[in-house]
Amino acid sequence: MPPKSAEESKRRLVEAAIEVMTSDGIAAVSARAVSQRAGVAQGLVFYHYGSVTDLVAQACVTATRDRVELHRARFDAASSFGDLVQLARDVQEAERGAGHVSVLGQSLVLAQSDPGIGAAARDALALWRAPLRSVADRLLTPGSPFAGVVDAEAFTDLLMAAFIGFELTDPVRTEADSDRSFDAVTAMAAALDGLGPVARRAVAATLRRRR
Image (cartoon, rainbow, N blue to C red; front, side, top):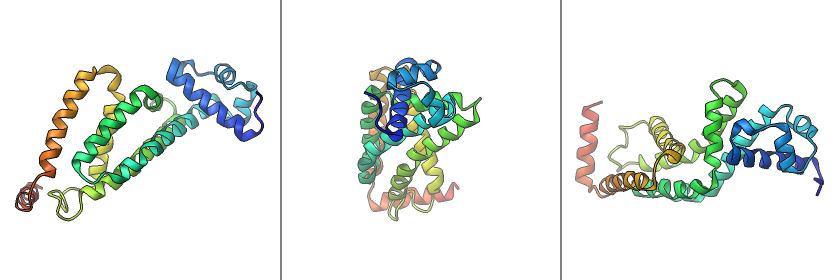
């Protein structure tokens, strides 16, 4: 059925671009392939987005925004290291089948040679960074062994690198590899969450001396 509005045409094109990228890879994205999958005229790719590159950029941001929003409530509820590790595990399982993280991964590769895609990839990473910063702030509140010792911005950068990196490398790891990694980090998180007030102060004091 032909699209009823310009907004519907744009939505179809973005959704089709995401589908092509997840199923066939970014190299397969073309005006013809996307328009055929979207069921619209090929010229609408250029009418609405100017170029295939700009369409890919929009698809990268849209795919990421959709996935972040899907998990936002879980990010908002995470208040311990254990919560964060379990969230990462659940997101990894959910994204394994969806394939949308591969859109970001492919965009990051292309960003090295295409400034337009690079800007979109930065915007997409920022979408993941925002909820992770909220989690970092909660984990660094007074009483945490890292409060006043670890910079929130730096901690967020570390969380994002680990979070996104784990998702992007999932295709080359077996399920057993992932389980082993998560089990190890879960044990460490449980140890951190289980520290009593005295132990927390001791850890904080040690970290301050080593700064």
